[in-house]
Amino acid sequence: MIELNNVSKWYNDYQVLKDCTLTVERGEIVVICGPSGSGKSTLIKTVNALEPFQEGSIRVHGMEVGAPDTDLPALRARVGMVFQSFELFPHMTILQNVMIGQRVVLSRSSSDAEAQARRLLDRVGMADHAHKYPAQLSGGQQQRVAIARALAMDPMAILFDEPTSALDPEMVSEVLDVMTSLAKEGMTMMVVTHEMGFARRVATRMVFIDRGEIIENCPTEEFFGGTRNPRTEAFLGKILNH
Amino acid sequence: MNWSWSGFFGYLVNPFILGGVWTTIWLTVVSLVAGLALGFVIALMRRSSSRPVAMLAGFYVWLFRGTPLLVQLIIIYTALPVLGIRLSVVESALIGLALNEAAYLAEIIRAGIEAVPQGQVRAGRAIGMKERDIMRHIVMPQAFKIIIPPLGNSVNGLLKTTSVTSVISMEELLRRTQVLIQEKFMVLELFAVAAIYYLAMTTLWDLVQRRIEAHFGKSSAIGAAEKR
Ligand SMILES: Nc1ncnc2c1ncn2[C@@H]1O[C@H](COP(=O)(O)OP(=O)(O)O)[C@@H](O)[C@H]1O
Ligand SMILES: [Mg+2]
Image (cartoon, rainbow over all chains, first blue to last red; front, side):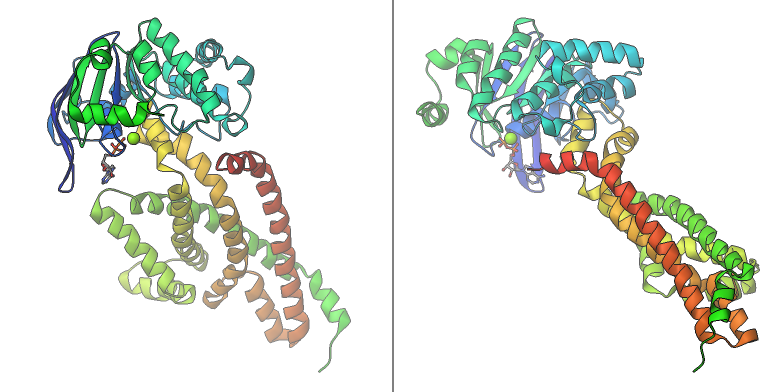
């Protein structure tokens, strides 16, 4: 479904991604971890073409992301994304936030879009807040709305970039719970996160990336049970020790 | 110095002067609307990824902000005919005001657009929106709130700046005041009347502006809270 082949990317002469190869099958939950600045965000942003790359190829559902004639908006409409900083639209109500993409991108009727939005808000436990503005919600609530906004487009996969790292600790679980239920329903997901408990429970595969290189890419049980690359070991030691 | 109260009150309700007030108002409105439209296009051009387009817009702003409106009006009215472009006084006044205003408004609009966080644009892209739709549904509504206060100040300035068109004999308030002064020599009385009308117009606008700001302030208070 998502296929990265030898992807490399540079910022001027600084190489952020080095020869990254990774395949995500339908229904897989791939968790990506690694030190800060290692290129995790950059990697998943290349998948929906928010970041261009210079070498290699990325195919999403048969579409060639790097090809100049690819309809990027159409591609992005099929791949949801959830950001660390939520990025809800502050001038719209929660309901409008979840409707806008359906209306503008998918040209759905107002009543269809609203029905879908209300259904999804209910699913993430935010139905009672439909009339509010984002600033009136807590971080955890905003992130759940952001997930509903992504789901509203009926995506075939969703990319999560550290969806809980901007949250106060008590709000982390409400967001992870929504993600867990999505995973159970078979959604294809690429998740950048350091929540190792979530990863162990939900991920089908673990990827460890360091300095732009994919160091580890293996099934979850192997990652947490087997022998690991020393660099992975050092990183896990740091984040699991507290 | 003698001051004539009857002269003062007479001119305060003089139809010739009131006609000038009306001209000042529509000059302001028409050049504002034209200036906004052109200013918006120039603001977008300045942000264009094409260097020549951005430079052309930058040149425009530099040129019109860097020279006095007085000079621009005189060139439009007296120098363009040399090139075979003959414009009436009204046309010259409107074009001059709109071109000049556009340069200032372009900067205000650009600053407003750039104040909208880039993450908002990314979020729009991520749900598959086209750049034009992102501008329309996400960036502009947020930029608009930021733009309102400087835009209001700019309208206040424009109300008074229209008086510069008197140099090409545009019959707005100041010009008509001067015409009467030439005939009647009641310099102080007439300028006092003109000042009162300018004050009335700018005060009225201030009230309108406050209303607009209060209206949009409701949701921008929410916006401010969000930025913590
Ligand atoms: N626009 C940019 N220009 C230059 N360097 C950048 C840019 N964005 C990110 N980087 C650099 O690329 C590296 C990877 O960034 P990122 O993908 O955000 O890391 P992570 O998400 O793993 O913390 C970092 O060293 C960062 O400083
Ligand atoms: Mg990151």
